[in-house]
Length: 260
Image (cartoon, rainbow, N blue to C red; front, side):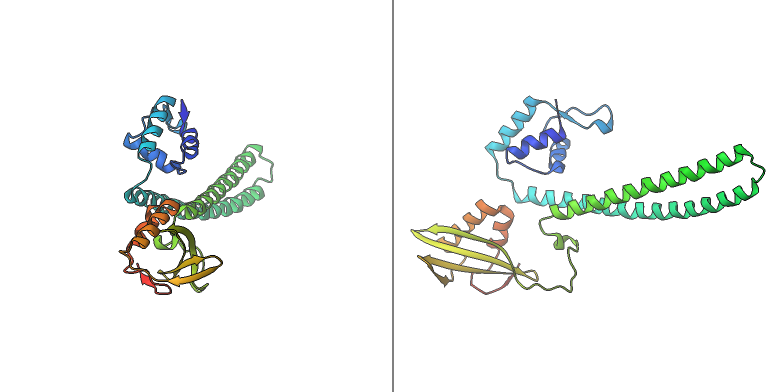
């Protein structure tokens, strides 16, 4: 029997997914048969045979739909929001623990002053409370650090963090247009290169015809065969989500920005 982490490793090697949340979602939906754990901390177990059947089914239909991408994004967004809420809760608990620590420290010193007659039992009781308060404070601090690390990991997994309200850098910083990607492809015995830029939620494309060492900037209509060949190249190299964004443009004109 394989754990969910071992299942994720196999699915990653097969090029199906690298997201542990998607593995758990398939298990919850019944797409990937699994044995429920006796104890929650043990996690689900998947048989080798069931995993092979699942991988084979994904091979027959390897391309993920836009709905699957959107579902994964929403799931990551939900996990991020939960981690942020947990972060706030842990910060509040840490503040309360620190307040309690200060109170106990003060009480301890008062108690030590009153126990000048060396009543060992009383001193031991206050010392125990003091040590427990310190231990709880350290545990809360470690949990807070772990929650902040989880938030950073989820931020990196979001394909477009700013779209979901995640601030990756100061809004005052303006770096100008950003090159998303460059693709080269061949159409009707001619070579082409396209560069896709983004700037302030606007997009622009530069399309070139390559002849030897020279590049000639051109423009095409969205309905043209050349543009459709360009979309196919984008889909094969960058995924369905990018292709859908490109297909929504009115036209493909160099240096002309189109709001998606």
